Length: 187
Ligand SMILES: Cc1cc2nc3c(=O)[nH]c(=O)nc-3n(C[C@H](O)[C@H](O)[C@H](O)COP(=O)(O)O)c2cc1C
Image (cartoon, rainbow, N blue to C red; front, side):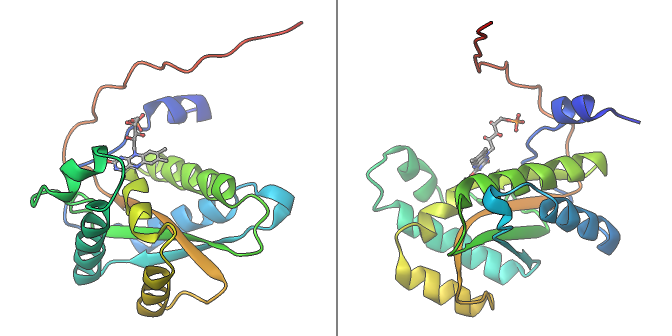
């Protein structure tokens, strides 16, 4: 049994997945972990949209790449112009995270939910990847927000933000990147 610290340190971003869908029970546990995240003023403002439909994933991938072509940040142009690039790495499952418009600290709250879900997946031997890339499709784009709210049956009160993909890993874990964060301490 891994301790929580082992679990945190062993989780690695997964970018190659087996085709097989995770079980309903595993999916339920991942969603439950997201629901138990802390949130500013306990608003619990998240909405999770569980997508297994490959056509929809393909559409989001292509639409995001199209949106990135107009980005001011040249970093995005490489992905946008790479026909081979699949933002979801062929994962069998995408969860889109949206936040309710009355959220107190929406981005922090979705971050906490995402980390909880990634750790729950790790605990179950399931790989995950945080997909911030698709935020390029949704940010400041009311038309796309409306289009996808309707396509994905997301209630009006929510703003789509980013994704997480999940699935059984196809390859061994990548080596961890050295940790570069800093801290200081005052006594
Ligand atoms: C906010 C955020 C957005 C991210 N977006 C993407 C993404 O769009 N695509 C991707 O492949 N990885 C994405 N990642 C994963 C990071 O690249 C990854 O966490 C980092 O390289 C460290 O690797 P590790 O998770 O294995 O420790 C994202 C991570 C975070 C926290």
